[in-house]
Length: 308
Image (cartoon, rainbow, N blue to C red; front, top):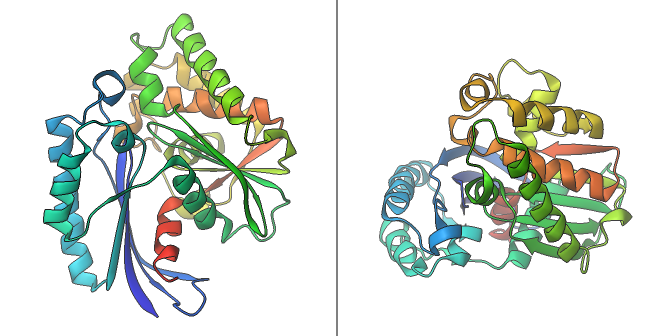
């Protein structure tokens, strides 16, 4: 067994997983801790093309906290990946330098294809009973990764620049969102899916699996959970009509009404409506009857990669 630490630095959140993995086959993870902080690293990147100083400061503060946890648990190997916002930023070197100073390793600014493969590896490990092909949708803050795969691995993948933070920052000015703002988000998502379908045949999917906070929050709301409970959300099946109903509800709520929902993380309040619109449009375009929410995702894929 080997103790590893995986860090996923996205547009909206930064997350840590410390786990024991079997070096012989990398098939299993024994989780020791899983943490998330909303740092909004990608705030403004769609508009400015740069990581903001205050966003970097929030990210570095979270990383110092994570470093203390990594040291306390005695992880032998650490891998940090950075995704959409960092890919898009001209000043990514500032992030790299700060991470190197805090963690002692460089973050890997991975491509959309690499992100897709890691997400699929992390989620697919617990989907042995799902009908294939599986379409994995990782709806992040800056981008969405779409991966079609089966028992052998990834068949096709595409990363497109529609995510909950990017869509909210680009289009939402009203509270609640105005009809023309909603329509603009949906139009962007349709255009992105048109691009993705050049590579990924969405309608071949027998099962749609969604990972990351947008999907898990929508699933929790559809299920009427009294609080966010990862154990109850993991592998929860939400019918397409319930995805549509929750999305409709979120888009007519005010900021304060969304904040009062018991499963809502404070860092998702201002972007969850945009994220739900991405999910609803994807479900419609894929023509699937439901979406399976998974709490296993790119973070698990990063940890498993350290065993190989």
